[in-house]
Image 1 (cartoon, rainbow, N blue to C red):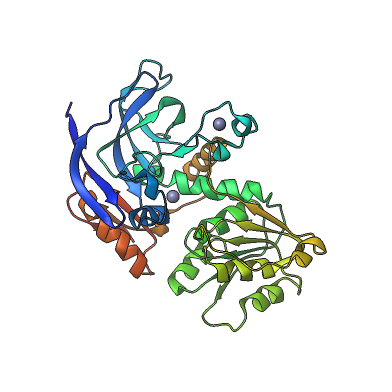
Image 2 (cartoon, helix red, strand yellow):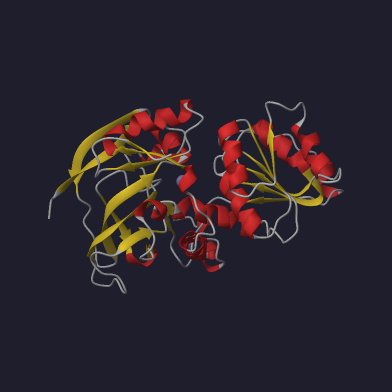
Length: 353
Ligand SMILES: [Zn+2]
Ligand SMILES: [Zn+2]
């Protein structure tokens, strides 16, 4: 087997270098995976620009992935060479205060593949065997690379306890489109998606939104949501943009007794205005949700395997690993791009939809 591999390394903020690095060595509890596809996530751009994980550089990012198992450590059970796999990227100590309460994301030793430790913008990646999920035979590798973002949406729906017959307003039509799909599967009605890009709003409809609101075309998005919910505001509101303006709008859309799901990631020092009065007298709830882990991954696999979520209309492009940096920038400047995948196994880009 080859000793070195191609990898995209963020060496310091805004400096990404394609280089040959050693293929990761595995211990008895790890497996080595040949990466097939990695989906580009907003977090990758934040790592590239140094807004996130800058203390972990140099780093190979990439965390939404699928691949083929090429080597299994001695202790790996139920896994063998040639298995089509992905891996839950969320790792923790397993025995601290938080881990024992099923809150591993808060573990002091928490780390994520491709965010805190080397990830999948490379030919190979290693992962602890217990994190690995085998893909169903019928699932293609590209869908396999979409399990991670799907698991995050499922985690958020569970965190806010989205219930049957409830109204949901979703701000943002990037991952917001997936929030709409999952809300519909949990029996929400109506599902309302607010965003500014007509193409993405059309996708939101396709994925289960009953109403879409183009925020560029209306004077007051909050008033529009109230109109669709008998004047009350929505039972649940999901913020999936990550700006202070949209967080403040989102909170204003929550009906008394309702819930805001905080999903969009803002800068670490961003501060929103919030009237405690509306929380106390209105008994409004705010729930945070950061990542899908554990059974969220099994749930994501089931929904994708059985076509409850059919994500292919969201897939825009697949580009060679060498084009990662330009693709990260294109995603920032071309609002019509949705999911872009990266592969070290192709030499020129392919348009998917
Ligand atoms: Zn991600
Ligand atoms: Zn822990």
